[in-house]
Image (cartoon, rainbow, N blue to C red; front, top):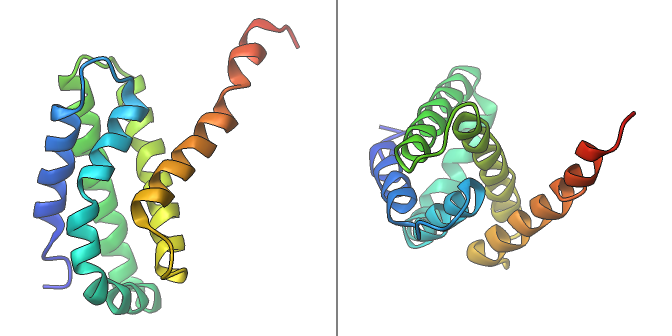
Amino acid sequence: MLFDGETALRELLVAGVTEAPEDLEPLPALLWAFRTAVPLLEGNRRLSEPLRRVIIATPALRERSHAKIAVLTEALATALRDRGTPEPAASLAAQIGMATYNHIAARWFQHTDESLDQLLRDTFESLHTLTGPLATAMTTKP
């Protein structure tokens, strides 16, 4: 009962990845998908905040929450593979995307005045800034 919305969220995120513009790379496609879920997440916020506190305080529920995240991550990886993203990039992107989303969700619950959509855009932009220097590091010998 506590994880009742899991299927709806998974289906919405997978549809978001599937319907994202074809020219989007994996992480931007995931951002697109997370942004499509904003209305659902905002609509459930009133119930999600107290539920999150109960989950954090209960080891068995934390374990169930981690299992839910794993299922969502695999569903996103499958959707990316279906878009043509090869392995291991599809799985890695899905893991990075879910970790980023979980970071955003924790902040959103702590700062009730922040827009979820804006947090998604800003945090994925920060992720881009963090990973951008990798291109230079890949061509430089240690």
